[in-house]
Each structure stands twice: as C-alpha cells, then as structure tokens.
Image 1: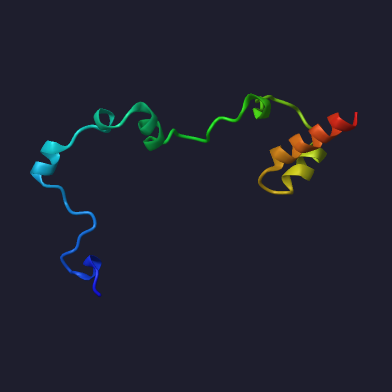
Image 2: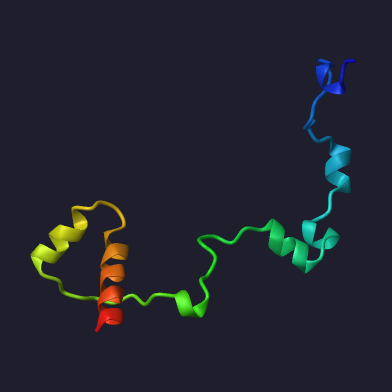
Length: 91
C-alpha cells in the first residue's frame, strides 16, 4: 500500500502562504512560560549544582608540572584539578 510520502505532490514542510502568515501568532501567545522555556534553548551549558561549580583562579605552576599535564592533550586543566583533589583527600 502506497503512503502519502510516495506521492510526488507530498511536501512534509510546505511553503507558507500569505494566509498562513496572516494567521500566525507568536509562540508566547500560544504556549505558557513552561513550554517556552523548553522550546528556547539557553546558550552554553546548563549550570552545575553549587557543590560541583568550580572557581576561576590564576596559579603559577612550574614548567615541569605544566609540561607533564599538557602532554596528555586536551583536558589537562581537569587532570590538574583531579590531582590536587587527590592530594587534598590524602593530606
């Protein structure tokens, strides 16, 4: 049995007509705020819970330490953080 999609006239996303534009309404007039929050993606990553947030700092490290961690490629700052957290737990 042939479906509508097999018909050469089928257009899943037809071009809008003047009538379509005249009837169109802003999403805010049609949907509530909860739906709009789901439809509109905020830029960037979602915020982490406060316990997992990190703080930006400036720290001077020896060339040997930097070379060691940078040689591992991308994510070296995360590896520095993990090493420091391990040192804190073991102290």
